[in-house]
Length: 218
Image (cartoon, rainbow, N blue to C red):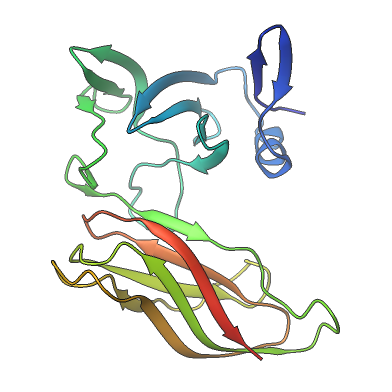
């Protein structure tokens, strides 16, 4: 079993949850893994890359949450490793070296692209189903709270089969610049006999802050 341990004092503590540990344990090669830490925007991140497995995982020490980090591969749904192959904090800048080109990039939290390539954010929710009788459910509305007025949009897709296949994307607006009030709403999404898994994808070069989601279900 492969996992990530954090030392607090003298006591080691496993900080990678089961889903992350299970994914890492499937990699054929883990001996080439490398990591680095940096702090930005009030958060401390541990970035762990597995080159042979073409994967990068990031642990937010401040929130104790994990996410995958990838550089654009030509498809918003294809997740690979992050371009950063080394890290240095120089003159107040977070610098990473590109493993493919040798370029040096600065990590900036208010630039929403990767050297001209799309920076795609994807959030997948847990399955929503009728836990009492496992009946078919109907999704009348899905409401997503986010920071509005950023001048970009998001796309909703969903899975009916536990995440194996996904629907077409359905666009939603995060408000034109200065339009700060409102929510993203999708209506009449259909019926789901085996559960509903929503996924939000944002690829526009704008600020993306998702706060929560609500569904009207029967």
